[in-house]
Length: 125
Length: 125
Image 1 (cartoon, rainbow over the protein chains, first blue to last red):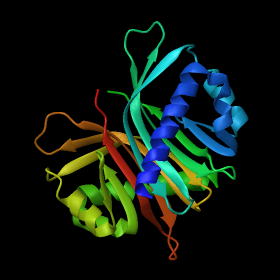
Image 2: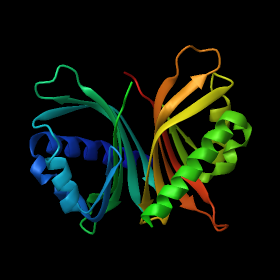
Image 3: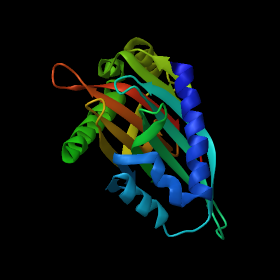
Image 4: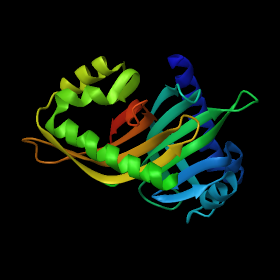
């Protein structure tokens, strides 16, 4: 179970940031109506509002670079908790921004996962 | 429910870091045999091993200062997810260390909460 949660975590992280960086308008497909996002303290609920927020961020092209991924099974939900640290390079900016983010992934009927909880914070030095 | 998760998150964070800074030998009381800790990538399971790890860290007295707390209900477990950023000042060190940490809290029979998932990472600049 522990190895499985790590595989799920790594695969999800690859998929999530690849979508974010290359096809951000599709990112809402990873959320459901019950999903919650806290983005730098701002709370949003539901795939539509979350997708709208992420697509309205005040930057266009960006590249995420992942430093660490920690995954644990979420025994009481059958899901996986994924904790990520890394940096975002915004197009045209000199220095990347460091961030931490956690996801609570819940299994779907179709054998995949969706994001139920998503908390994002930039790291200030 | 959303306000309640924030109240739970804030109260837990106060309690957790107060215990860590002032009575670290009691911190195992916040975990259960099923609990998991990922500490800088090292995985531990169960309140005994987690408490042993936290009490064997290579520093004595410390003071946590909390910068942000983000809490969300964990609908599928009846619990609360808490994401913390802050810094740790170690006794005798000049500069505090920045960290991010997340907790998945699960309700107990007694109406309290225990830590099921705990992921801790220092933030490197």
